[in-house]
Image (cartoon, rainbow, N blue to C red):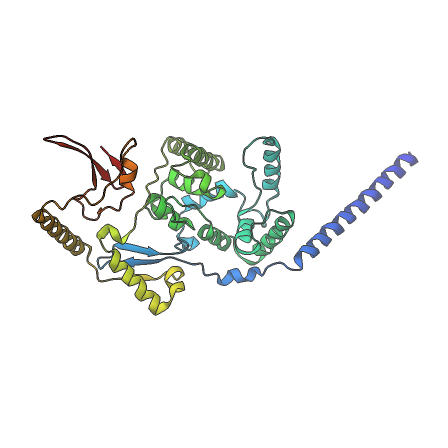
Length: 385
């Protein structure tokens, strides 16, 4: 009996020593990585670059200027549907953890172990707070050191800022891809407009779920290039919402059957034949406030242009040009292209066209007989017979 007591006493002592050594090692690691952590207090006065918007006299939008397409939206203005979708996709325990989610880490490790040897993307264990720390302060270098620093900054942020403030930073900063080339969407407000032509308050369940799916891999979940993969990821988010109880099961099942429904928005002054006007407005703004303010300052500009009058003026100009051209008669071929032994579509499409004069189309003569000629017509993005 005495031997058993001594054994358990020895085991307890060894356990206590190991425990204290572990605590000491953790404290040493925290001290080491805490020496040069970035100043997270700067987030208190964070002012993100926001795109400037130019409106016509009737209030319609005619142009946008931005390096990062973003409209900042306070958390109080974000619909609960959108918040629930992002929490389901990224961090279901966001309002429970203190910056680092042990459950999420274990889940990520288990998932990564199950998917080892496959080509499936490794599941991350980062919380929304950690992602904010990475995006704003720590950087995205793939290293163990960075993950430790990220976790430490996240825990300090949780002790300083409210959960709503952290979520607001995340939803407005997150990169959500480019549905059309060159139009990079940052934040949920800009993404809702670019992908669906809607404000966030108009989004339906399946649309909010798709936007919430994008942070994982925006380019790999493109709605046109990788449609099937995008739908799979969207449906995963929908399923998580059903499991978390933030969406009704019947609504989720109905949403899964819907297409993505992406309809890229096309905002261009050329839509109302006002390209030169909008460029003059941009130059004037740059002279008054500087390029940085124009592209990052979130200016809202009301101009004098009347879209209806602009359309009418443009139509009168085009009609006059057509009548003048017809009155002058045949002016001969503008250019000769070699169509021997190859399709004429590509060389014709390479020529500069007069697409702004709607009745006019470039055409290539492919065959001539005594009483007829065969021609091929070009269209804005292609050529056809």
